[in-house]
Image (cartoon, rainbow, N blue to C red; front, side):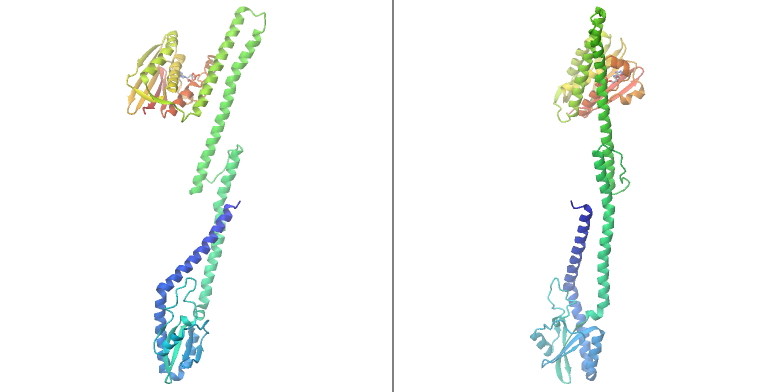
Length: 458
Ligand code: ADP
């Protein structure tokens, strides 16, 4: 695997090479398009000055040309007969076309610098060929010469070139070195995050991540920590759930086992025999309810898209629930006030929502003393319908309210377990309501409890 570190290094190197090339090409194009004519014009002025001086001081002409060459020029003086006198460093190539020479000997100025061909990888500025010069006609001792000149860039800019080359080279070296260091700084937190993912996979959630950084890596680390906390919480909840389920199954099984053993005693009086058998019957019934509720919860956990939604009338559904509960209501002498408008149509899973109302009403019946009352009320508020199940029980202590919808939570653990309560009813209710994108709230005081379910109509 190529590491991120070497990848960044290679990309930086490629970037440096590419930008240097691009920089060179662009400045060369700029020279060819903009600077070349200026350079030509400037050099023509100097060459004409030289010509004027040489023609005015013919006796010192050669000495003048020599000392001018020492100042940083390359020159070639050509006679009509083709004799050449070179001043300063020699030209790399004497590639001048004969007609150009002829043109100067005939009295015209040769603009080799301005007409130097545009080639992307040859900088006209530095190319010391005879073609890349300015040519002026010079008359010495009555004879016509052609004087070709161009600046000697080695002499004029020798140290400057080394200086600039050094700046360029060092800039590359330093930027690569700085990039190597900064890449390490960039890559390190990613390596730490990778380590963290491995540790999470092994089930260890404690980790120190660079969450204080205010850049993308900091963001990533922050989201990663949140995710790890969520995973930890989910893992804890899963373990707790498994422990609860085992406990809930274990207690009735122990009691069934104990009473079944007692039943094996042949000398048991009839009364006790019946009592033990009825306990076994009761405990098996609780186990059966528990397993049904667990199955329902597990199918709800996976059912977010599997709701069988359709439109149905809320009033007739709530009526059916009350009919089913009729017997229990009568048993505890509980009066039920029914206040549901006839025209509320709800779009939802009919079977699951029926389970919601059933759980809420049966809880009210179960947990309030005999002779009290229940009020079942529904309203339309905007695009939602609100169903309230209010009882006149003794209420639930305020500190218990936050846990009411937790799985296996019972207010009076021992007593309610004995009465077959599993503590799953409200968590099933909450799950179904949130699958319908609704909310459930509970309010309670010493004079009663209200569960308020709000569901979107569409
Ligand atoms: P279960 O299915 O065992 O009835 P729930 O999850 O439905 O459990 O309820 C959790 C706890 O909330 C119950 O153990 C009970 O103590 C309390 N509770 C629920 N509804 C009411 C109510 N209407 N009045 C008083 N207590 C209630």
